[in-house]
Length: 157
Image: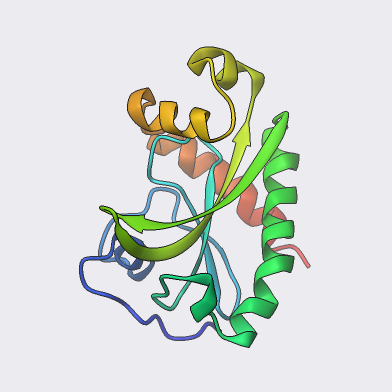
């Protein structure tokens, strides 16, 4: 069904996708070239990551086929996050650094609520920075529950 994983040693993103590292909530969705997983960091319950199966560190290194799948998938995942979490906004941003060096390309699809913005007194990139400084890692049971809901929606024809 999917392209074989091209795994890079010492890459958390690759380890999560390949099963080397535990992934709370399990795989949410996949296409031929992309995988959708719940974020393991402190960006809140419902935050998803969209990343290529292949270890790629830059948008410019994507193949034409990987690129063709990306836009429609990001739209679909963003719509699912909006529908299930009912947040005021859904951020979609690309990250690809790890320890200050290029890392596995991934897109963060993050539901943002007014409650979060009030708690951290921030929005946009400042909210994400604040959440990384002071936000707790989501409860694995809550992650499992929301991932089950996402799967039902994203796997529907």
